[in-house]
Length: 212
Image (cartoon, rainbow, N blue to C red):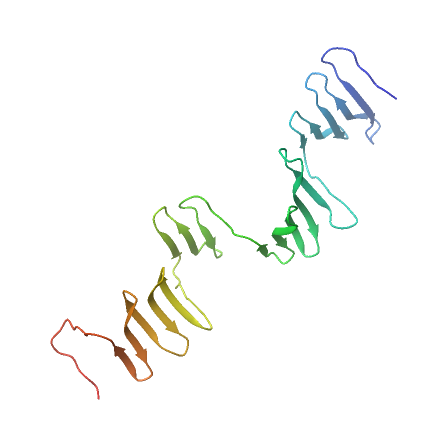
């Protein structure tokens, strides 16, 4: 069956029962815009455009297993990315190497398999119910900021080290010493019995007490 309308800029409409004794539009071929439009009881849901399609409302993708939405590269004509639901969550997969780049899991966690970049200055990663912790770069310096009233706690089962390139600044060992450096040379170290100073110890006052 072929339905043809030769009238310039006019449409072809298909209508049928609306479930209430009347009729409703189900399909329109718009002769003035070139769009093919699908309706649900007269309400527009999908329309073709010069660049693709426009969906009004929800789109449901259903398959026996791993329903997927593919994104095809216009240059290479390959489906470079797939978005699908499988197993534990909602996954974004690079089809070039079959790796899942990003996954939103059922337990409300997100998993990234590569780097996460914020390629703009002064945009922040914010953590906490009140955006308490901020991590950002202002164009010159990088910040780890407690924006609320709490403390910043570095907690480890091993050691904490502060370095500048290849130089040590501070080392703090679990169940051990805290070491302070000057120009990568250790100058101060805590011990089980007190402290060890390497080099001169300069005091700002002329009197101090030595406990022995």
